Length: 373
Image (cartoon, rainbow, N blue to C red; front, side, top):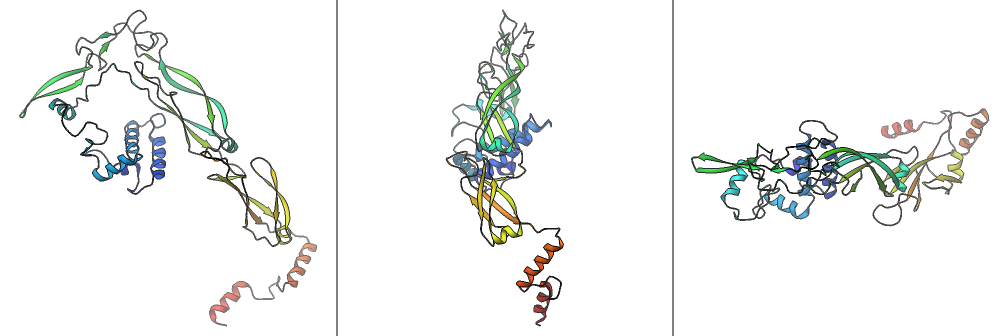
């Protein structure tokens, strides 16, 4: 346990991090170090380290025990280890732990297949309203010729004569404390417990082949950027009759030209002319599904927000929809005709305003106020 890094350090979190922060940190690091994406030699080890840290810190009870005891919980025999509070397995189990025995798991037992990750990029409105799509992913499956055994049809694997099917060889080591027994994977069968004398020519004795699998995906309405969809059993095929792993689909949402999403709400900006803002108007506003009328009161200031209730994104977990918030921006005309300039000048004079510098500017008045004039 001395070499194991602190779980909070692994995820880059403070010890008072919230559950959401734990989840976000895990998603970010899992994408960064997943072996299917990151081809660095240490990516698999880092991915496993991140997964182990998340498994503990995302579970309230395990996290509480970890916060109290660290990696070695006296009531649980350590995190990621197992065992109880006594040594019921005998000294042999202790020696296995210190000298690489790795336990006595049956090498021929069914084994679950690995998980896969697929990144899907969708349009903004597809995330809002949902989508169904077919994707094709490469994955390993049981060989159809040997049905996963790895042996040539008509033959079958034989039990290893060296380890007698256990997959392990036992060695006796003399130490100052006496003899200690050490177990290692059998060198004759590579720890499988079986020898294949005649290999299947289709899979070359691996029992697995790479295939392109077509999968139908249903993306729920309201999904957001960075969300993960889990498809049970659509990952790598299991070994020796074990279940398949899972497929995790990471959603990436393209930005929209007009709408911006904030949780379940939609934000947008709409321009107003000076006349519309001053006198009031009724304008059309695009929403996700239609155009609606919005009444602009007279004297509306730039930056004012208006709410269109229920015109946002359907709630992914729950009922109803968010709202659409419209921010109006008063646009100052950049080109005016002589007549327009004259009319605006008259308007300014009616309000006692100067448009030609006859009165002090705002900044001049501020300077005078500071001087005490």
